[in-house]
Amino acid sequence: MGSNIDALTTVFTEFYYWVTVVFMFLIHVGFCVYEVGVARRRNHMHTLMKNTMLIPVVTVTFFFFGWWIYWAFPNFPMAIDFAAGAPYTPWAENMGTNLGDRITGVFWAAFLLFSWTAASIVSGACIERIKTKAFLIHAVLIGSVFWIIDASWGWHWGGWMVKYLGYHDAYASGVIHAIAGGYALGILMVLGPRLGKFAKDGTPRDIPPHNPWLVTIGFFLIYTGFWGFYAACNVPIISPEVIDGQLTGVTWTATNIYLAPTTLGAITMNFLMSLSGGLMVAYLVSKGDAFWTYSGGLAGIITASAGNDLYHPIQAMLIGGFGAYAAFKLHNYVEKRFKIDDAVGAVAVHGYAGFIGVVICGFMLWGAPSSPYEGYAAISPWGQLIGAIIMFGLLGFLPGYLVSKLMQAKGMLRIPASVEIRGLDAMTNEAYESAVADIQAAEKRRLNEQSK
Image (cartoon, rainbow, N blue to C red):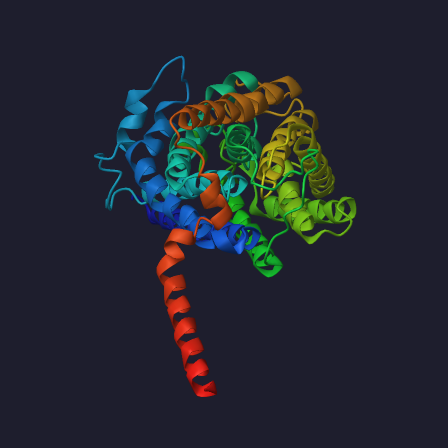
């Protein structure tokens, strides 16, 4: 490792990312709890197992090719950098136990948890009616292909969107949330609403969460994990020499994902202020609805995330509040106008709020450098708008829609109506229900005999 200070820095960085990964696992725990709280009782196990099985499926595929995409695709479609991707192929020395490389494993895991998040966002939107096989295919595509392509383009210090558009998205308003929300919307347009969601005249019916306590706990776990997510998007300590001396005059610093200076203090204040702004505005606009109040807190964080490395805390609060307002209004408008049944509001909270957050960042940070490297475009409204369209539309909505249309044509996408009415857990619970029926019948016979 060289000098003792280099060794200490390496070990600290390794431990730092390991801790953030553990915190980020709570995001997935929160999604599981939250979605089960929203789903009706006859669909609990299907909802839970769908979210559980995305873990191994996305993990394995991300190991085999997802991580390689991040390093090889920064300049795609102009070029694929096979040399840069070589150390991140499954057979490379870095991708295993290696005492000479203490960073790749934990850094890979941090990005993997981002992949789980992207797939979980899609999961919540289409609960209670999508086939498990169809969802897991979508989970692989969004978790190990499309989101990591956009990360390579706009969340890599050498990505072409950063270089030429000045794209800035420090904590993934677009890179994870807008793309996952757009992908979910593409699925929903083909999948259709849950049976009974809309009346004959097209009026949407409210299907409230069956267990508000689980929803509450789920959201708070997501908030906690999201805080760890913020930390994982930073490099905790780095010297200028590591990034070609670009940070002139700075000896050691923390940086954002683009290797530009920031601090954990800044993101701590801005995270809490954007959460607070979202909660307050959502509480007011939803007239105290608990589900949308919690969702608004998340929408607030997501809207401010693109620029939360540089915003003032009051800016973060105001942007978070606006994002919560926009998510609530757009969700209800799209639901009524286009009959889109988003069971958990994922498209609005992640997709619309993420898109809006990327665009707002272009105005709030207009002219600020997108990177410490010379020659990169500065942050601008037009660069951010193009970036938001790429994230939400090109890499999100379009593949989600096209793959779903193909699945629909093959009969792979949606469960039959008879299964939906009975519940997706029916087959799983048959043995249990049969045993209960036998016990009840035996008890009834015993009581009849006693009464004679």
